[in-house]
Length: 364
Image (cartoon, rainbow, N blue to C red):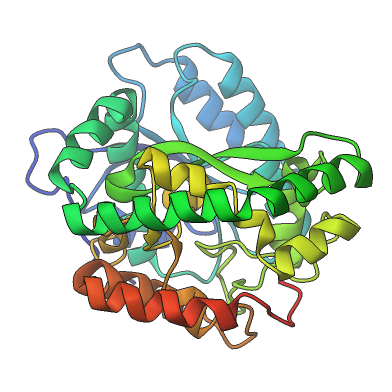
């Protein structure tokens, strides 16, 4: 049964979210705990689900496909077939497993499923996640327009913006010789571009291009799915939890020899001065997150962090960076605190505390 009441954003709407379910082992659990919030159609086998989906029209296709992992792993073939069907290509797919199997989790991540749960899990968490996935699916086509609206709502204070420009421009000028040396060293150390660019989510869920000096191999992104299961600093060891919101790889094998030095000295972060000058980030704030991490911080409690400015440094960096006892919840709480309490003097305190935090011993 559900252990707590989850936020059901759809509970007062006229149209209830529809789920097509396949499986028998967790069927009673889902029927008891989710049927009150969703319109669930139950199918005993993968074949039954395929038959059901084949009978649907564009007006009756489900919002979510919730499927148990079967012993023959036909569920993964089902996903491949669904992705080939233009009517079902945008349907949300979540898998449920009754036993721990890292290979299955990695396979699900590689296929870019929306989520994967291993029993036992709190059905309240599953309810919250499914509600968000539907909401995110509805707003995603308007993501750029939405981010512009939100960005206007959370406009950076003029004083903070002036401090950002003064610090960033001064550092760009003063550190330009060092940045040139680092660029040359990267080019000589390994094959690949000097700079690494990725999409990050900052203030008000605004998505922007995030710059760093390249410190990893060129195939680093392809290796992330596997390493996030085996080497993640924030991996939760509790029974039934398969992944955490943040990903920070311990003893990351993707890092080049030079990259290890750049990371430990934080020299790889210097290109973000350009992000600050452009207005994507502030000197002090909450770290902008990769899209796959931002999508997981969706409850009312944790979305608070996106109401504050995105930053080059922040409370996390000066208090817990690189320490093994840094929990995911602790980092989220630091982010939320800054989003609610940021001020000029808090920024000054964080800036002064950043310098001794730059050189860390832990390889994370």
